Amino acid sequence: MISGKKTEKILLGESVAQHLHLVMTTSYGECQFDKGYGCALWNIDFNNVTSDSKLKENIADAILKSLKKQEKRLSNTEVVVDVEQEESATDDKKSRIRKLVHITIKGLLTQIDDEFIYYEHFYIGPLSY
Image (cartoon, rainbow, N blue to C red; front, side):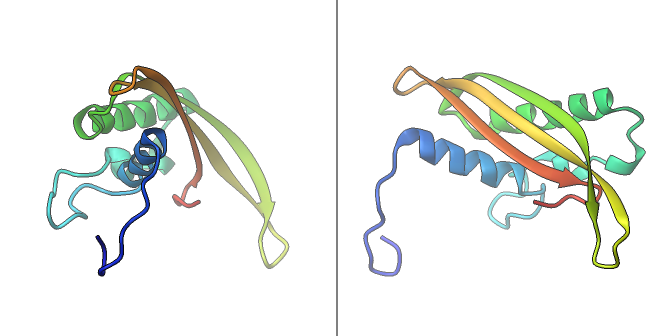
């Protein structure tokens, strides 16, 4: 119960997906109840990474490490990262190039022995949705 109201039940896959998003968007030390909760994704200096291949590896490693520690309902977890450059116009009509990161997380929902796939994307440099 939250504020005297019953909460809606959701499917296991949806619950895991919501938790994955929360883990990936939380930096270490941000949660007062658990300073070790979150993801090292926020510690990656995106501007100093030398190549997209190294950037993909750093992001995938950070996410996988966090998920193995913080999401026990998922096993056989695989993280696939793809990075592309995207050009957009700013308010003053100048071009701005940002990197768009696509993340796909695949695994097995251990409780029901079912395949799980989750997709997330965000822009980096600076990090944003």
